[in-house]
Length: 143
Image 1 (tube, one colour):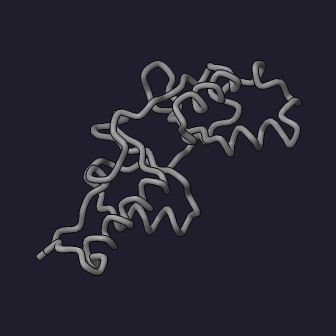
Image 2 (tube, helix red, strand yellow):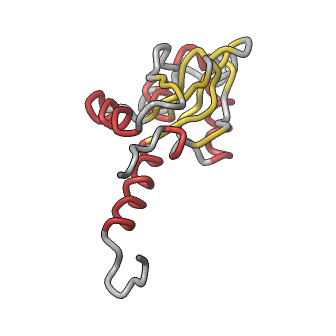
């Protein structure tokens, strides 16, 4: 009998993070440089929230000029109560909660410490792998 995978099996481990007091401009630059859209927000070594590229776009407005991104802090744009799960949480419950709440990311912790991030991109990749294993392509010799 197959076992339900946990979030540990599909999360992105050792995620980048940003300090709550960093400027929004710094966060934007960091996200672009690392080609990521979600950044856990830390303060004094503790997880405080998450900021996404969408959160930043919303706070900066349609012209990205007012207010000035270098004057705003990540704290001003972050979601202070993100969805956080333990590393042993079943994947089906995480994905279901993300779908019901229309969430783009989940922060993963172990003993209260940040250990990973799971995004809708990770969910799509895991689903594609599942489909490929369950329904091999014609002519595929996979058993």
